[in-house]
Image 1 (cartoon, one colour):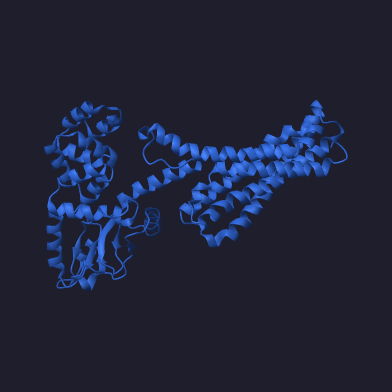
Image 2 (image 1 turned 180 degrees about the horizontal axis):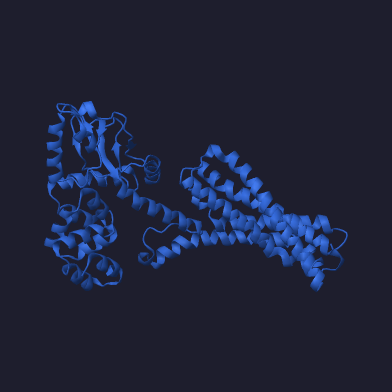
Length: 432
């Protein structure tokens, strides 16, 4: 069996089939496969193995991957698996477990290439070769540290190989190094990688002592996780803590029920707004025909605006200081989009009356009421959809909470008020 084949079949296999498939792999392929398993699946499989095999595979993992695996099990199991490691690895993993899972410290690897600034370049290369043989996973950059582990600079292998004979590391290193603090959130960390295009970024403490490095392959998983979380919030629910098929029924219910209840209560305000205008509705039932048209247009425009703004904020393209510029752009967009829909709405009323009748002498006034309402509702929707994420961010909440369903519910209520207010103004004394 090939590694890729087993990875594809893994989620659908039972315990016995997984173990049989794993044993069918060569030793080299088995090591590759185990390293490719997601932390949750690796932890689940590891606990099914005999204790002797657990020890073998736990010691195969780099410290950062071992820490990720241990975060997927309960406390009692964590202690048992941690004790399977040798003393050096156990200390490294314990340090990583002290950090929050979504902080830079929780993502970093403590194994990185390091040299002293006073080493000659040829000595540094020999030292790096020994490090690579012993424990290094990758060598993207070489970090220059003093005796207290303070970060002094950075140097690439290319610079070392091109250095003149007799040069020291200090002669060829760069002293300007982009670093991140231990407690930086993983979302902000991913923006750093996107901004600078680095393959690895060092993590330092308050005294600029290097604690580890975060590599690009770690950030790929972070970007996927953050995008999934935001996408789920866009749909009007809390983000799941696990994969869809692995989430329990109770977790699914809990994550979806809260927001669904909030949206339901919000929609009850729509019924209240309809009740407020019940006299107008009783006099001109024809107005209710256009209610779905009005409120859906406002909700759709608000959802578009909120999606654009939330994604721009996630990518670091927007800050709170840009609120005025966003409002100005969305006001113009709302007026343009609303005017386009207004023309279509008026044409719909006039043409329907021309060919099919039904609106009588008030067709043009009804069309104008629909058209003007569409402009107002779309403008309100775009402004609400664009400003709400910024306001939530300013209040310390996740902007993704301003999901499309939430904005649509907000605009539904305001859309009814705008529509019936405009209709009352235009049709008072005639149809009303």
